Every structure is written in structure tokens, then in C-alpha cells.
Image (cartoon, rainbow, N blue to C red):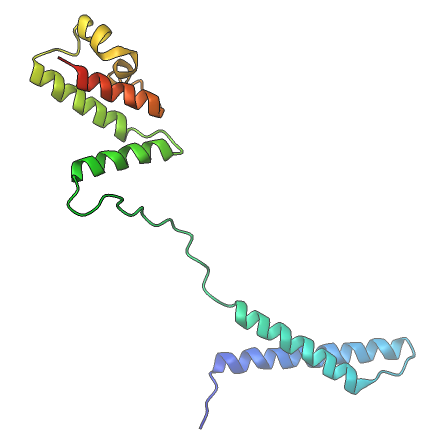
Length: 164
């Protein structure tokens, strides 16, 4: 025996009620206008419109789509350098960010401080600050950096690599 869920019976019961109300309303309007309604064609037309409308609503009754953005897939092949992959993703995320991103400037500060420490240099030294680091990297070290462009990132990395 086929059983119909209560929610479905209620839904189609409501549609049948809408059909009866619309047909009665159209008959009443035609009586007020002193015309003779063709009840059978009118009932069939209203029934078809209500049924099609109900089926469209049933078909559209699905969960809303998930608009979440999936994470980028790793573009580096297996066995690649994970540190390099992490730094590339860091730069790509910084360049795509819509708001201020402090992760890349923080990483540049860490790299600069580690390099200066290995060389025995002090970042506060005016000679190191002015000549070796340059204005962009100095701004990053001072925490005044904004969203960096690709050329500025390249300049910072080049200056870190050229420290001697």
C-alpha cells in the first residue's frame, strides 16, 4: 500500500483549496458582470495553472547552493620543496587579499632579522638601514608596510638575499 507523507497531503490539499477558491471567485466575478461562465474549461485551466505552479515550487524547493570558496589546490608536485610552496602561497594570498594582510610583511621581518643575526649586523644601525635594506624593507621592518605590490616584494627579497 502506498502511503503519502502528511506534508505532501497538506501541500496538495492547500493547492486544491486554492483551485476551488479561484474557480469560485471567477464564477462570482462573471455573475456580477452578468455573463455566463463556462465552468468546466475555466476549472480545467485554473487547475492546470495551480498544478504547474505547484510543481514548479516543488522543483525549486532545494537547498541553497554553497557559495563558499574552496581552498586552492597545491600547485607543487609531490616531493617539491614545502617551504617554497608555503612562501609562494603566502605571496599569492597577499597579492589577492582585499584587506590589509600582515602575514607577508611579518614573514619578511622574520627573514630579515634571521639574516642580519647570522651576519652579526644590527637592524637599528643607520648604515644597514639606509644602504642595505632600502626604503621599502625598512618600512616593512618598522611596521609601516601596507599591501605590497609584486615589485616591492621582489625588491625586499632581493635586498634580504644581498645582505653581506
